[in-house]
View 1 (cartoon, rainbow over the protein chains, first blue to last red):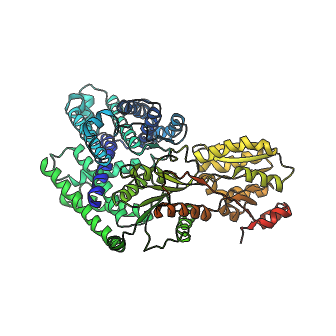
View 2: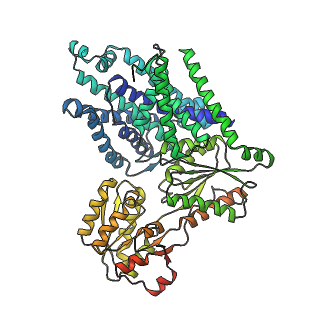
View 3: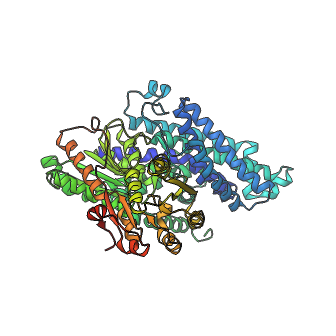
Length: 296
Length: 332
């Protein structure tokens, strides 16, 4: 039972954080844009969620509002980079820094959501469908549904004409220009979608933990990049596996590794080192499978 | 597609199986004892390693012992520390919940929040320590209780008044995003006038700004500085003390470690005692004498006065005899 419980709650974490990985996948993998906004847009989603939940808004609606406001953060970074000519890394850093203050302005300070308040895991449509399950399984199913739903929507979008243009921005931006489209606008659009997803992730995490803390965004970019790279490297040989699927697995894999380390009693001070070693191992092994270090 | 999903799952299973078995190994004693005598496991989740938090944990274990419980026969401990990472704190809490521990002990707010969320499903009692404001953190109702490390602001003001009868203004540096600091500042501003002080504060957003803020507050001509448990400020305390010593302004600490660093004195929390108080509460829960649900959270009942004689002499401050008698020398 210990094993099953541990597996379910770890998978739940991986599925929830996959939303963030999708976002980083769009900026890093598709747009080739190292977007540091994530460390700010993740807690932004959580801050908005905490405030709106405390004020009695429907938790599902809260998800959408958080994503919409997260999109604005992406818009800010994109605008700075594309229209004001600020370098990509710096644009992200500026938005992230500003968001630290903005998040605290939104939430006042660290904010907790008491148990009496319903979240997506305890509110009505969920309870009617899954009410007989224990909370742990309910969280798992809800996280699974959200992670898959967002993945499918994203896959569908990437197949549309607009989605194909977005993919072209990172791979072959001249093509976009040839098609008489503004690649800057496409970049901004990509950042908007990515940060909406990241804020959505922040919102789900806040609903699951029932708390917003101003420091919860620290290190999320690194997590996102790690999951994207682990995911895409693991599936490099299998060209037909979608990028979104790969990063979903990457996220779950990452959370499992952490849980393994915790279960083994690895001291927290060594945890990051262990993750770094694992990260390197996946990169090196992934490349070897393909028969060379051409991507290194 | 299906194939790969299956593959991924197998991978997940395999790795977790590895973890499952190794955790079994790690907990062999606990598990076999569990089977024999049902020894309850206490999961301790500490937010990070830090002198005060370590003291809390040590005190907690002392408190359990002093309540007559024996490690190994009455309980076993599963200690984890999150390295100041909220996400790891969450996974530690889920680990405890999956193992169905008898009690979770959370040291510091982020760990307590994570434990409380993970314990919801199984209604595992959570006991916390080193939390400034459990009410604000919504950790005051439900199957949860513990101890708060709220700063003894009034005792500190009284101490400053006794050591500097002529002082008019107290300067305080703090980080605007630290809820504990903001709450303490509010209390200082509210109670300061009762002791005849005006409070001058300067807020910073990160550690790099603290020394500049220290220069500004010295320039404002405060009579002394009172230091909170603000992590950013405490981190550069030695450099602040260099500046204040040059300007001949005494700095009061908020706990013994700061007085050791060179603050003149402090009415402070003894984190070992705080942890002990928490351990005693946990023992009551384990013995079945009380539940976390019905026990209200406690604040520390007694504060100690710590002094640094060298710093006091340097700044020519004399300690009144009644205080000197009870004060504990922190410097050596």
